Structure formats: C-alpha cells, structure tokens
Image 1 (cartoon, helix red, strand yellow):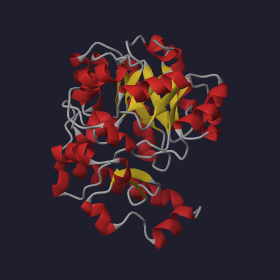
Image 2: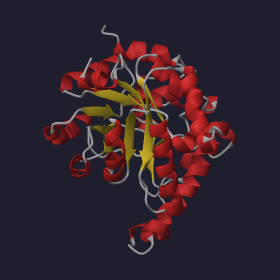
Image 3: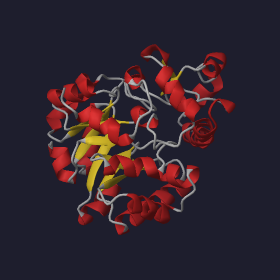
Length: 320
C-alpha cells in the first residue's frame, strides 16, 4: 500500500481515470470493486449514458460499496456549466463521495466547500506552475499527466514531472503510458504514490465503448498516437485512423487565431467544447460508422486483448 491507497482505504493505488465519453457506470464500479478506484465523469454519466446525476450515483453504488471518486472539470467559459458543476458537487457530497479529482481551473472553491466533509482532493497537473496554484488552494495531491497520456496529454515525461513536482511534498499519481505491470512497478519505484490508467480500461470488457474503438486500441502502436487540435483547440492524443489521416490534425488558421486572441478565445473554447462533446460521444458509441476520433495514449503498445477490469488490475499490480 502507499500513502494514496491508505488515505482512501483501497487495496491498490490504481485509478480508473475519468473519461468522456467512456466512463460508463459499470466500468467505474468494476474498477472500485476490483480494489482500485473508479472515477465518475459527470458529463459522461448524464449526457452519454443517460442517467440523472443523483440516480446515476445511486446506480453505481448499487454495483459496489467500495470507495468511488468524481471528476470536476473547472471550466469557466460557460456560466451554465459552472452552475451545473456546483450542483454536481453538492449532490456528490450528499451521496457521500470521498474523493474528488479536479482539472482545468483553480480548485480553491472546491476545496473550500468539500474540506469540511473530509473529502480528499487531487488536482490534474501537467507542469509545476499549475501544481503550485493548486497547492496554494489546499489540495491533497496531484495527478501528474505526462506526455504519454491519452486525451489532453502533458508535455513532460513521467520522470520530469516527478522531479519538478515532488518537492511540494504531496502524493503524486502518474497518469500516462501505463498498461503493464512493469510500468506500474517502475512508477512506484520512482516515487509515485499510485497510477492512473484510461486507455487500458477502454479495452475492458465492462467498458461500453464501441468494439471498433477497442480494436483500434489493440491494433495501435506508439507511432499511431498523434496530437490533434481539431477537437478542443488544445492538443489531444488520438489514434491515427484512416479518417484522421484524411482530414489532418491541425485546426485551420482562423481557428488558431481566434484561440490566441484574448477577446475571442473564451468563445472559441466554448464552441470547441460543445463540438467535441458531440464528436467524441458519436465516435465512441458508433465506432467507424462515424468520424472516428478515438482518444488514446501511448500505452496502446502494451494492450493486446480485451479482458475484465478485475483482470487488468490483477495483472498490473502482480509482482512477477
């Protein structure tokens, strides 16, 4: 056990990361039931999988009595989204969720509300400057998203992130590039208090993503993972499918200019967010019948078959 797993009361320091649109309730529950911890992604729960938020939490709780977490993306460009996030947070506290993962914003207001309920809060970071701001806000630890992660990956390696952020004295979780036991052991040996996986869990039997998506992960190698700014306006790691090769990975010149301009960047981020919510949902649920934006990280190189979530955690944490 590590400081992280002890603090949450879980058997293994393994997080099934929040994934839009792939965090279906059964996958989240299976990760917790297998001794790790599953993270609920509110938009995925409600918009993709059709659950009213509180009822969705109750359904997941009916599948496992083990600890669960919730991801809050602290995007401020939409007032309506900010209000909804506050509602989700209040419901999560009422339903007894004890682990929050915050991202893309200052987590101070979440800390101020949740700390009285003894919730443990970790913040996603890609470099030291963001960790320092979250540290000042009072978070308990950091999820260090490195340059091998899927989705919005960082720029730095796992080793660089650890060297830069460990001096803050908080537990660190390695996110990116992990799919096998040797990866897990190497990160714990380096000093990380745990690991977070996303891509590996998409190729789990409990994940309801389309089989085309899962097969694309199984077939892909590291060199098939490319960055595109066409989804959210920021670089996102995806699989280079024939569709991606056809359309390219770069946003057009006008979009790039609007994203750099202080007067238009918030509008553009909102536009991209709404567009990506639709694209990613369709791709994950409909597979190659739609525009196949399949988010994945470089851990695809170590994934060769679909197995249960329990088996994934067992294999990752076994010492050979």
